[in-house]
Length: 180
Image (tube, rainbow, N blue to C red; front, side):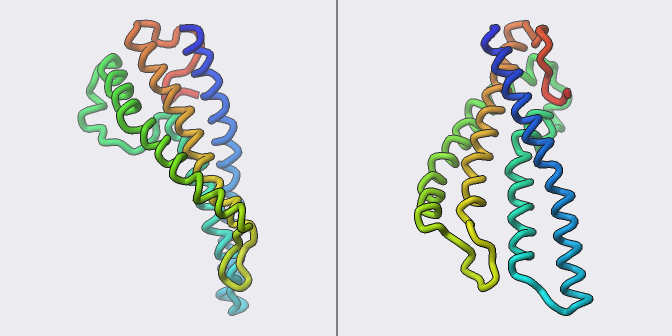
């Protein structure tokens, strides 16, 4: 049980830090979008690199914050049934959902994106558009990295569920989903 609790604490801290850092990218995205709007509507000029930067930042925010969202139990789900369940039944739903869907899907994305990213790195892929951004392979590398973080947090969720079902319910100071 100590190992499970240690793993949960580690993954929660890791994804808390990464989620907090990722959240700062939203401010950067606002600045980039405002710059793009000013350039387009005041100066009548649009820059391809700036438009690409917008969706690059958005992609990093979306994928980078997914594990953080899972840590805080703020991911999308249909709460009509789940909300009324006891903590023990919620733990069963979380454990089964994690084992049957979340972990296999994360592993599948990591595995299938491997060649996609490696090929991009090998050819030093850049934007195909004139004036586009270089090093597109860095953005593509976010895909398996983000899903690795989701996998790590999913394992922590499974461990939390196991502890809840075992009656430990994380009494050693680790947080439950949605706390911290």
